[in-house]
Length: 418
Image 1 (cartoon, rainbow, N blue to C red):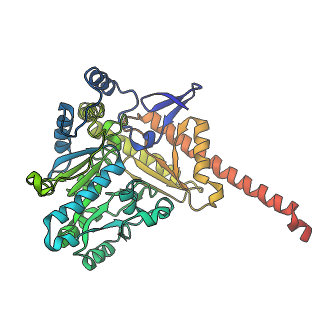
Image 2 (tube, one colour):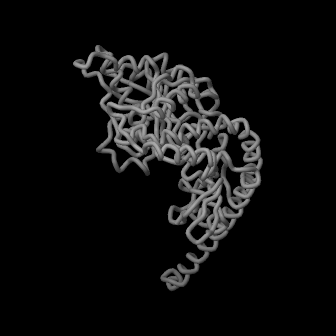
Image 3 (cartoon, rainbow, N blue to C red):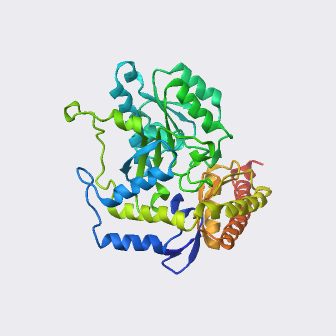
């Protein structure tokens, strides 16, 4: 039961402190209780906490939209707000679909999507439809629309799908550089750039889901920048408000935006809206978050910490208990290999770490580390030390539990038969 937080730390109701090794589910950027974001929220509360954006707007939403257009890749000039990563993707899917319907003619056949195996884009029905993790998504199969899955990192596979279904594909949906919920699985260098080129060649839109990778997680402000890619639609959430409040944004090109413009009676409107779209408090937090990036030179100061993380992870990669370590910027996945599901090995590591004063989280038997960008070097070293000792303790406990099971078998019917 978490009661408070400050910097890279959270404190429970019993007064125990823990390093926040997963940024409160990948969204905290500048640390908990950051004075600039706190102040921005206090000032906004004194004015107004919520007003609808259906038919109205407010200064904070307009200011934030301008800042987002400025910091995102060139060519993304329009901003549509929602309230979570799932809805940011849902908005992008609906925009892409309606864009082709509005263009008419043979374009109306462009009604399907290509995504990647092991993809995760959220938990609403549309975002699940372009997901690729059966454990999360297969239960809802009857509810979903059809999408085609390409093998991650395999350009030939995605090229084949685009060529075969060229007149049917509305968009390709991708997490750029790294698939987060799949276990921090990395794409080969140049893959994103090639996917962009393939989309252009076959006339499909490109949707980049930077809900997890955006706002510095990969070492640049946005992952797309590293391969000089501008998607047609860009999905943002998580770190947008520094981890303070729910807010999401889907950025679109001017071409997509203008396709929806028409006299009222043509009903080309994008009929999608949320009660808390562009919430003033969330916008205030987001503006303060972006200003803090600039004032504290967050991206420039991050690189030495990425290098330190790489050094510390290299030591963990040498452990016999670890099969592989995958890192992209400040995102890391420590793969413990295959263990029986009943062992819950990743979960055992998490429990060991909690007892040592760190909050981390598993994706199956991959332990994920994604600390706040503001964590300092001493704290980062402590987090990795705790992780290393927790892996060792959990795996040692697994051997012990296996021995107990074997002894139980020998004491049962098996021993009698022998």
